[in-house]
Amino acid sequence: MRSRVRGGALTVLAGCLALAGCGRGQDDELTPSPTRTVTVTPSPTLQPPDRVPTGGATGFDDQVVWAQGNTLHVGGQALDLSPVAVEDVVATPTGAYVLARGELWSVDLQRAEGAGLPRVERVGLSRDGRSLLVDLAGDTRRRAYDVGTGRLVGGRAPAALTAAERRTGPGEYAVTAAADGSPEVTSATGEPVDVAGLPDRFEPRTWPTASTVAGLATSAAGESSVVSCSLAGRARCRTLGTVDGSEEVVFAVAALPDRGPSRG
Image: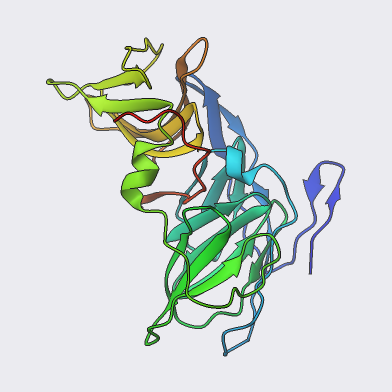
């Protein structure tokens, strides 16, 4: 069942719990914004299906998608997925797949729907970004589902996009550590890029676009925040949200844009 947007608010089922709100800010100033709540609809399917649901939104694959606890952040929107606690996320052009306690959910801006896959251990994305990859407990076969149609792909599953590739990015820019541990940004030709607001301690995690990198920043006091840096043109970083509590921050596995010039 899909909840409908009316007057800018979401109509939800009674079983969903709403958070008080999540913050998003420009640069280092966070401005409170309301949390959107989605309908959570489980699926009782026990056998792996031939098709999984797909989202109905757009723009998930060019936004910074990250999660902490029950909250999924998509660009400037915060979605309450209670009671689902996010362990891993795969972003697609029309939504996201969320792994929580062995169950896979298809999520867009209005609802979270059970995908009907039992005992899911790992999820990922193929290198070409076309297939959702799923590993089930006790099953040696890796399943691949087309992210556009949701249909099971026949034959051997394609190679997965690795965590190292996601951190390195498509090659148009690179973020490396200087001798003192501070981050350095260079172009594909090795020229240094001056980035306004680049944190002194920054760990790249994902590249939503060929010129946008997102990751975790840590202050001298040990406080963490999620930061996105636009490296093209007037390069600058902005804070998307603070990290609350000890729950792990999970960045979405998303398809890398077309790779730029080789760095050798």
